[in-house]
Amino acid sequence: MASKVHLPVPAAVLKADAIAKTLALGRSHHNQGHLKLAEGCYRQVLAMDSNNADGLHLLGVVAFQSDAVEQGIRLIKRAARKSPRDPAIFVNLGAAYRKAKRNIEAREAYETALKLKPDLWEAHFNLGKALVDLGDFDGAIAAYNHCIVLKPTSAEVYVNLGNVYKFKDDGDNAIAAYERALALDPKMSQAYGNIAAVFVDRGRHAEALALMDKAIAIDPQPGELRFKRSLIALRLANFAVGWADYDSRFFAETEKISRFSAPPPYWTGEDLTEKTILLWTEQGLGDEILYAGMIGEVAARARRCIVECSPRLVPVFARSFPQAIVKRYLGQGERATPPADFDVQISITSLGKYFRPSLKDFPRHQGYLKGDRMRTAALRARYRAIAPGNLVVGLSWRSKSDRLGVHKSADLATWADVLRVPGVTFVNLQYGDCAAELATVKQALGVDIVQDPEINPLGSMDEFFAQVAAMDLVITTSNTTVHVAGSLNIPTSLLLPSGMASLWYWFLNSADSPWYPSINIFCCPLQVGNVNEPNARPWWADGIMRIGEMLASKSQERLAASVAQSA
Image (cartoon, rainbow, N blue to C red; front, side, top):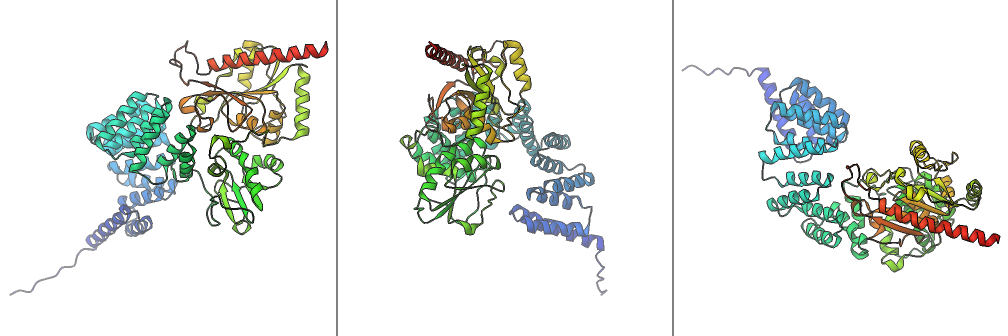
């Protein structure tokens, strides 16, 4: 009987087998979220074959998932050159582009994937997201409808579809999509939360709060849902629920709000008599100014109080709170004060639960922030000298908010009811370049709004505080200017849209503000007719008319007082 001959396995076969096993192990680690282990496997694959498309592709995915986004893009593009017929590579390339906010390239990558495999559900789904990023809502709806044809039982697609309809201000279709998602998956907490958001836009806040309770019963963890519930509750002045959930903003992915790390521990309301407390600010300038109204109360309780705020507010806070040590923070989430220098810490935005537990706990202050008195006096004298006896009225009409600015801004050219009031010197308080708008108003209405070249709010908030303090009255939309005026206790008329563009701290249909006693609120429905029609009335039209009537009355009172004084 002849003996068996054992032929050697070709090296290429052994190498291919080793690559396949290493890739499989890498994928296993990757699926379990062990990115470092997966990365090690993919690097081993590339050590064996530097042009391996799978190794390049998957290492690129790990890179962009680990926030090395540009590196990930380069690796996945190399993989695409090696394997140009693999649609999965282009789907992940699109995901990397989206993370880099390279939205046009993301769309192109998904479209390439669909050319290779037209029925690829993941490509349609992610194309929908990319089109939303680009503002192509109709295209996104088409992409999600393709997904529904391919996988009609996906609740997630209906949630995304509903979101697009909400972006289009089509609440009825948004609710229908969210309800379809719930029919497919009754545990889809996000759908309850999104229906609640539509209800908020429509002023149905109590119903929205009940829906948020349902959502949180499904998903009780701190995060997006609890934070959204807190905003609804606070708008209803339900402080017990609202403040309890408000810190969930730190865990809400869409908010991206940084929190100083512990230790030292976060303050939870305990006695501060023998302690040093660090307060820090967060979010935008308006929020910093709003919540600064509680700094003095904290400082009065503590042995020592340190405040870290954005650099532009340091001079104002230092002047306003001499009992505190005020310094700039290094960056969002990066404190400048060493941990050894304080005992406890808290964001000023989280102080409400301890100092504003009910409406009666809002003090009627006379202004808690202070402008430079000498600078204010000089500016006031200069503005009054332009037309002695006139009211000096500051104007601001735009918001720069990324999310809500377009809904909170009011076209200055349509403010004729205000700008034509006699006996008024108008001063521009609008930050940013608005020369074209001022020129348009001068040409159309014959009104010359004072533009002070010495004041640049974007450069010096200290100068801006002094300027606002020089006003007899401020008329503004919901932006940083209203917070500056309110914190200084300057009489202010706030032009405020209702619904989605109204932030919680203005509460519901209120004519005044617990935060700022000097503010009168002129609330207007956000939409009056179709704003795209030539003859449509903008949301602010009724409010401008009412403010114009108020301003005319004040101007007449000033004139009558001046006549009486000179008689």
